[in-house]
Image (cartoon, rainbow, N blue to C red; front, side):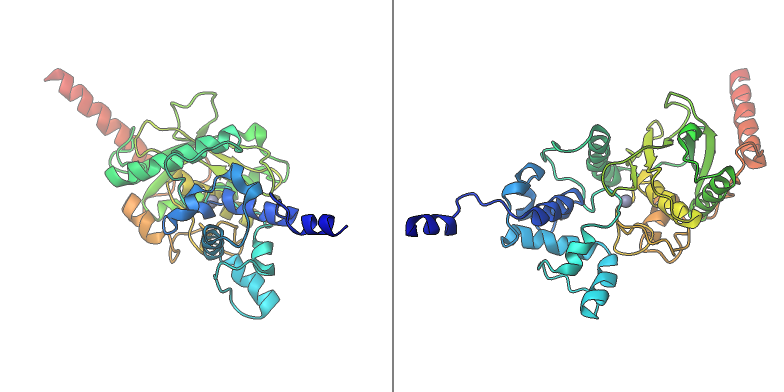
Length: 332
Ligand SMILES: [Zn+2]
């Protein structure tokens, strides 16, 4: 009997309880193990999570990165402890709660080189690869969609093809007009013109392709980063299960467009990993405002308006000017 009791006290490869495994998995998918400040944590891969324990230095660093990434932790800490959160790498009830809420699945840090993507679905892998490449593009180019692509004549401009056949019932035509209008106006303030174009099963007539798709677990939107060239086409997915207010849906779409423009998560603001529905659909006063101004110049451009059929005089003039220049060149 004594021998058996002793053996029970010394398990060899004890698996962490289910709750810890879920927490670690969620932390890993949120990029907490990829914080550049803590390179020691990079070696822990998603596949190793079942044999990882909470009390190692690599995990404590990752817990700290996780705690620092999302301002919702403050709300939970106030509920539980009556004060703001203290990101100390220790797992308490507020941190556990943070690991259960709906959030954007784009990780808070870019995946380090050589990391193994097994355990992710194909579209998540596409997003992770674009995130990795973005770091290279940002170092060499303007950091996002360049100006003067296509017929935009010196203006940063992206065309968004929207697959309305996937749009859920809780987003009516009017809701969509409101969401699109708010997003286009918010980007126009920073110098980026967005035009909605008809959906087609190809990618050469648009820079962003948007459709609704059932996403795994508690993820609500998923979007790919661009490679900083005019020829790129990236995806933007919204979960049809996200049926909050129209304003909250606008904030989510504004956030996912942020990734399409190469923004990373910030603590608080539009790019907070979990969506803060009460926010304005604007970059003004947001933690990402400076980055947006660097990417797109920060000078207001005319928003094209919510109706894609609406004629944009400036665009027509730009088109005609280009055409006349072309004819003039040929005559010479
Ligand atoms: Zn996100």
